[in-house]
Every structure is written in C-alpha cells, then in structure tokens.
Length: 309
Image (cartoon, rainbow, N blue to C red; front, side, top):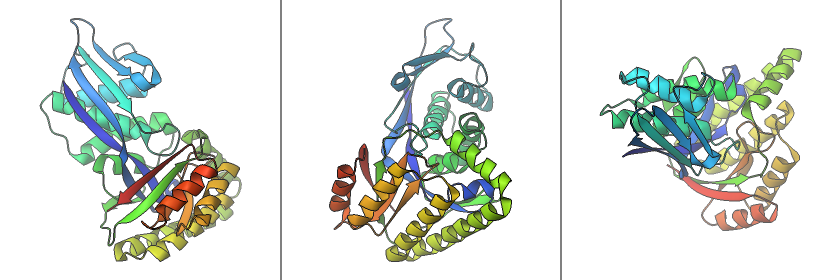
C-alpha cells in the first residue's frame, strides 16, 4: 500500500478579486488533511476510487470526464506514463469540510496524485502536482483562480496573482488563526458565477472593489513579513467590509465575524467563496480560548485553531 496526504487551506485575503487578476494570500491548514491510499486491485477490476466519506465508488475506466475523482487519476497516469486503467484500488478519506472554502477538492486531488506517483516509483514536483490538480479544479469550480491547488500542493503561504504567478513568502512572526464553520454549505462555482454576473452588470463598481481588495492583499503581505499583527488584523476587517459590498457575505458569516471580534480577535473575515463556509479570525495565544468560546456560543459548527509560520 502507498499513502499520501495533503492539507486544507484558507484564503487569508483577496478572495473573488483574485479571479479578476488581483493578488490574494492563502495559507495551508495542516490540522485537517485529505488522505489517499493505493493498493493492488483484483485481476481485471481496473482502477477503482473509493471515496469513503462520500459513500461513492468510481470505476475510472467507465466514468465520464466530468467526474473529478476519475479525471485526476487519468491525468496522473498519463503524466507518469502508467497504464491507462491498471488494477488498483484508491481509497480516499478526508477531515477537510466540504463546501467550506478549505480546498477539500484540491486536497483530495493532490493526495491522489502524490499517492499514485509514489506507487509507480516516481517523484513529481509541487508545481507539476499543482498543474494537474488545476485541471480538475475547473470541474469543481468552473473558473477557478488557481490559488487552491497552488497553496495545497506547495503547503506554504502563497502570494498569488492569476495568470501572472505566485510566490512563497516568509512569515516574520508566526500567528494564530481561528477557523470557524458557519455550518452552511457554499458551492464555490455558484458564488463565483453570481459575482461574475454582478461584475458584468456594473464593471466600473466591481473593478473598483476588486482594486481595493488587491491593495489590501499587498499591505497584508507586508504586515505578515514584518510580523505586524495589529495591522494584519485591521486589514482583515477592511477586506471583510469589501466582501460585504461585493455581495458574498451572509447573516451567518456576519454573526461569527462579530462574535470573534467581541472575543478579542485582532481581525476577522469570511474565507473562501462566502454565502456560508468558514470565517477566520486572527488571535493571540491569550485571546484564542475566548474567541473559540464566543464563536461556539454564536453557533459555529466547528472551530479549528492553526498556526501559520
């Protein structure tokens, strides 16, 4: 048996604007993981992907190209020069919540690519893995920015600009994020599509909003590199106000953001597509427990504390 894993992720700032060429920052969340195990299968069975959490079994040789689990297997086997439908069983599990903006699809794809490559005795660079996963992200999200596959594959903080490039950058002072689940599932492709319709209806307004979000991302990178957490917190609050104007917040998101700030968070905002999903809050070791408690009292379905370094 060959196994591989991949982390979840959160967007720290820049969501939605990143789809339109402005920068965004994303960081990995190692406290949640997708796991893929590759075993030899029975003679003639072909390749099966068993997604235990979804209670699905996919026969790769029979699935269509719009099935993301089958497609990432096909793309990987083609990349490494393996058989097109070998007798393998790929078992996938994940602790990353689905539809919460934490990159669950990208992480599952990344874990499958890594496990299959290792099973065939091959090494793939993080960039090669990211490029394969991006192709499947288009099935999940329609017009993805590319940030999910990049941060998940590299497992480092990423400063990302679509169609320009990305940079791994360094954290001047480790910081704590609280990730709180609203309990509301959000389909990224639906929210992204709605924002596109709004943009096409009023391009001047939305271009201005995207520019302001992009400026926040530039300032946030500087704050992170300098270890200036107070400034980072204020920028997260500014980003949340802009996301509300873009139209992707929700009552559930706003309630948790307010609770985090009441608990002493330096800043708080939604993370990901919006209309539900997760919020993130910047905390200190002294305030993390109180923020955690306030979020749970406000109805958070789950709370994760992760350190970014």
